[in-house]
Amino acid sequence: MLERDIFAGFGGQGVLLMGQLLAQAALFEGHNVAWLPSYGPEMRGGTANCSVTISDKPVASPIIEHPTSLIAMNAPSLDKFEQAIIPQGKLFINSSIISRKTTRDDLDAFYIPCTEIAVELGQPKVANIAMLGAYVAATKCVSEESIIDALQHKLGERKKHLIPVNREALRKGAEAAGMVMK
Amino acid sequence: MTTKQLMKGCEAIAEAALRGGCRYFFGYPITPQNDIPEYMSARLPEIGGVFLQAESEIAASNMVYGAAGAGARVMTSSSSPGISLKQEGISTIAGAELPCVIVNVMRGGPGIGGIQASQGDYFQSVKGGGHGDYKLIVFGPDSVQEAIDIVYGAFDIADKYRTPVMILADGLIGQMMEPVTMPEFKSDEEIKVEKPWAATGWHEGCGRPRAIINSLYIEDEALEALHERLQARYRIIEQNEVRYEYYNIEDAEVILIAYGTISRVCRSAIDELAEEGIKVGMVRPITLWPFPSQAVLDAVAQPSVKKALAVEISAGQMVEDARLAVNGLKEVAFLGYPGSKIATVEEIIAKVKALREE
Image 1 (cartoon, rainbow over the protein chains, first blue to last red):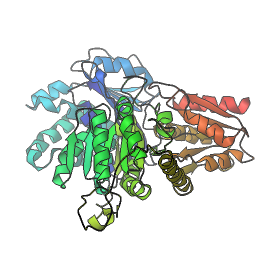
Image 2: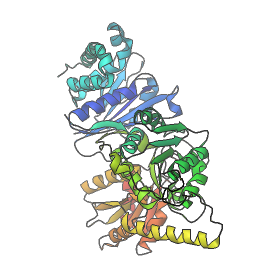
Image 3: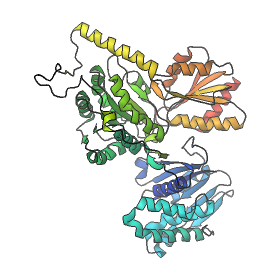
Image 4: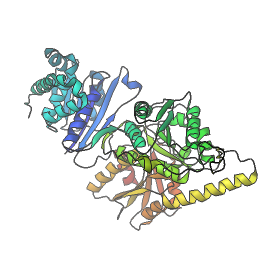
């Protein structure tokens, strides 16, 4: 198993957190992982992104030139990384704010209305989690339960009450990708 | 469920330092190492230590000098331009024969440069940095776990040789999260090292002469004696402390030589080349000083090896030590970029293939 994913969007959309949750979930399932953030001035206003590698072997280079999946939360991220995705790779587009379709015909593309899903759930902050739900359902690289475990680990006891809405967001995101959560 | 935890490089380095006995930290902010002082500022008071943000880098390194002179386990960290500003203090610490740990999370230079990962401070770290004939023991970790293991033991090594130890990481190691196993806290007994030379408070009848911490040796004989001590110590360090890793060197046609982050890109390239049936190996220096010259020579001297290739995130610095080690026996080519551009797996593969065909 080898997932090499780029999560990208505006600073504040929770793209670094999405990657961390995935890396933590994969670690819980016993895989080797590496999480590498972009950092610097580009986080202010432009795109923020992180690279997540999940492998059954020790992770050699954590730098991802050609992702197996791209999770694009905004249009600049789609523009920046779309062409780098491997042939037959997966592309997750936040259709709430990205109006265009992919220009590639060799990808599995998923259009997820993240903001609408989150607003419907009454918690706009979980838009990223809805997208993560779509990603996890489509790639099946970790289970929903491992993502919940990772969320629990990240949120701690004090914010435990936020787990149900996050779980709901994961499922709605999965449904939007045309998948049912395993 | 695994017992490993996901940790960011800088935070892991800070926690490992505490567990290795660090009780004092003096620093000044700079990207991409800010997570180290941030972490230290929260954790050191919890374990009875002292964190202090100094008014400048040079002040921080002089505070390290003071704490080390008083026998404390002390550390500072910075990134490239900040490390330059600390050099007066570092040379003084080396001249006064004091142990401490210095972390450099490298970014692109020269000058203020950029903030992305770089390996442009190799020369500064292993060839001096400050003025005068001195050496630092320099480590170049390639993963968060290795950074932890090195920092954890670095205070012991510094105390053993009364010499500053530098961890030469880069922005990627500092900012990356990887699964790690954190070692146990060293006990008070383990970190309590006899330091009869330390200035810990003298009084009449305390049974020892006054401890004087100084790097001024105005008498020629005194300075010569210092250098004899330092050089003798450096020879012992060269015998005892060389560390490196071999990767797939058996029957290799080309030997890569790389340290730190870029060695992992090399590893990916080696694995992909192996799938094509092209045998390439790697010597990965873990200590940059003392440099694993013999290990590099042994790997490159193998009859199967046609050429060697040093890969760095610099314009070519470590390659000079690799060439000295190989001493003209075979060609040591170079691939790398200054600033913060990192050679890709594809570029390394292309370069290796070109070298085979030359």
